[in-house]
Amino acid sequence: MTIGDEQIERVRALVAAVPAGRVTTYGDLAAAAGLASPRTVGWIMRTDSGDLPWHRVLGASGRPAAHLAERQLRLLAAEGVPIVDGRVRLRTARHPFPESD
Image (cartoon, rainbow, N blue to C red):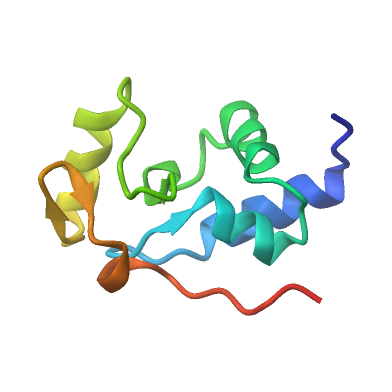
C-alpha cells in the first residue's frame, strides 16, 4: 500500500474537523478523502493519529475496537455522544463530510 503525505494530511485534517460530541467512520473518512478503502484510513490512524481526536472514529457498526472499547466509549460519553449497549448511535452522532471531488 503506497500512501502519500497528501493523503495522510487530508485524513488528519478530516479527523481534526470532527467536533466534540460527533463521530465519523473509517468509511466516511475514506470517501471524504477520496481514498479507495476504509482500511487505508485505519492504517493512517494506527500510525499517525496520536495528536488527533482518534476516539471519534469508529467502524461502520458504531462499535469501537475491542481493545479500545472501554476508553473510547468513556471519552465519547464525556462528550455527550449517544451510546446504547456499547454502540454509538450513528444516526444521531455522525458528522457529515462534503463529498470528495
